[in-house]
Image (cartoon, rainbow, N blue to C red; front, side, top):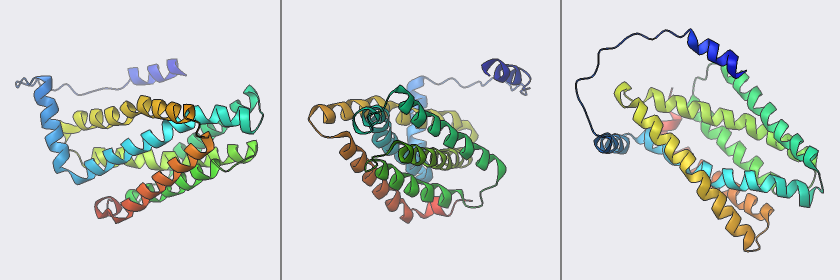
Length: 224
C-alpha cells in the first residue's frame, strides 16, 4: 500500500514558484506564527480543542484498553485485536462518509461528534463485555474522523497561505506533544492505585464538558 501511495505522489505536478527573497530565522518565524495564532480566534479554539483531546484520550485509551481486555474481560491477544480492528473499521467508514458528502456546517458537525465521542468514551469505562466495547470503539473511531477532518479543514481554510505551514506545525506540535504527557499521567494514576475504568470515565466526562463549553463558540458553530 505504501508503494501504491508513493507512485500516486510521483505523478503530482507542482507549479514552480520564484524563490523568496526574505530570510527569517526559525525564532522569528515562531514568534510571527504565535502572534498570528493569538489574533485568530478559530485557530486558538481548534488548537486548544486538539490539545485537550489528545491529553485526555491518547494515554488512557492506549494504556487502558489492553488492561481492560486482560483484567476486566479476561481476554487474550485476539480479544485486543478485535478492539483494534473495530477501531480501524470505524475510522475507515468515517473517512468514506466524509469523502462522500459535503458538510454544510462543519463546525456544528465537529462539536456534535465530539460530544457523542466523549459520551461513548465515558461509556467504555462502564462496559464489561468485549463485543459491546468493540462496538463502542468502532463508533468512537467514526466520530473521531468527524471531529479531526473538519477541524483540520477549518484551520486550513481560515489561515492565510503564507502562515499555513506554521499553523499546521503549531497544531501538530500541540497535538502530538501532549501524547507522551498523557501516557505519563495515566501511568502515574494507575501506579497510585486508581482503576483504569475510573480514569477513562473521568477523561470522558472532561471531554464532554469541553465539548459542551464549545457550544458557545459562535465562530466555530457558524463556520461554513
